[in-house]
Length: 427
Image (tube, rainbow, N blue to C red; front, side, top):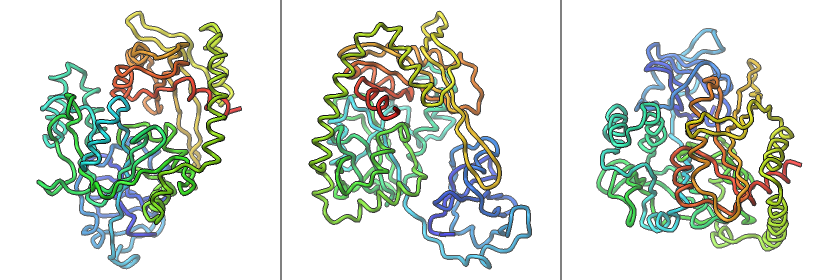
């Protein structure tokens, strides 16, 4: 067990917490009893009921010396000090931020000034400092939205309150589609924390949520740099980090980011390898030709192609062409049981995709996102399902309104070229 990697990841109520050791192992902390369970696979812990994101301020360093630890699950306990001593160094977090592509350039200029900005800050009443209850009330009053929607926004944004100085911030697709940025969080010069609720971003009425970073720490990395580990490209360019703010648990990913930070040849990090770049251009032209051909299909035939694609990837089609006569519409609802391997018990989770399909050229507007959002609440899926909303379009891209709305409602947008890549990689 590496004590410096220990951190509290999640909680059930006020007395039960999930403690991670920075790999696949973790324990359950029973705070009232001051007992730490024997280590087990994290997925096994997560399967034991619903866990909320950790919102507390427990000083784990001070608590360790007071804990009793199970020698084995359900077995006798001994003091933490006796087993491990009391040395504890808190490891920096690694947080992936997804920013709005529609305002990419403005947001990049803010990065150079030492500010990572996030959306859903278009009202001066949305400060996270007011706490969950007041934030939810403010959000409902301003947007006239539901309690559930307000609570989701709080759950997403409140993670920013737990970013501390020295944490690593990773921002995909900045300053352009071919690069990502790595930077180090620092405290707001006017306070003792990294988060600030400030003025709106220039020329917008949004992005008041700010994490301060050291602008001198910014490193731009090309996805195809020969020095960029493959795991970073694979996870950053997939839906693995499609959420607005993601605290990374994958140990290999964090080690890969650390490897980049310690790389001496910073210039080579920002440049693509010449051969892959040439091959990528050839591959891209082939995808473009395929998209042009598929656009000649009827809308019905393109939907059949997407349906076959999902079946070939192991998904079961639950519904096709469902609508609620109130603006809600999905073309496909499909699911797949994803096995979770643990040393203690067999377990699986259900991954459900709500898919809207558009056979468009040029740009796709926000209609498909509206249809997905309106329909999602009528699907009556199990609470245990992991649900992802996806808009697939053969278009070259999406309008600004579409990207903003998709960002607000966690809808993944896949354009024609992106779908061609996914399609051929699955064959």
